[in-house]
Image (cartoon, rainbow, N blue to C red; front, side):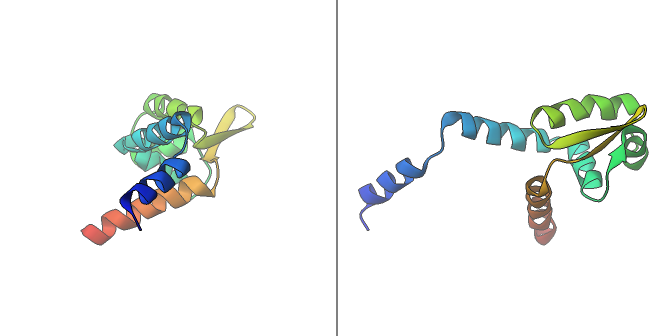
Amino acid sequence: MKRTTIIKQIERKMKEQEVIDKLSRTFNILGDPTRARIIFALSKAELCVAELASIINVSHSAVSHQMRPLRDLDLVECRKDGKKAYYSLRDEHIENLFEEGLRHVLEKL
């Protein structure tokens, strides 16, 4: 196959800039070690801020601060139960993305 044909095929399949930007922001958000630990914990169970803080050994305020960018990119969702807010991963795509990245890292160790 000619190189120009390959290039044209890729150009047709290329996603819009808005999509690429959101994908880039998602990887950037997941690149923070504290947020990665939060995602790991939430991949195992729905948890409140106090539980997350205990598991990853940071303050409640640190967890709350890290939840905002995760919510803003729809990576996590919140369920209220009285005064407590419970967080979980938004969907299986986030868990799959995280698990694939983790498998990649573990294979290289």
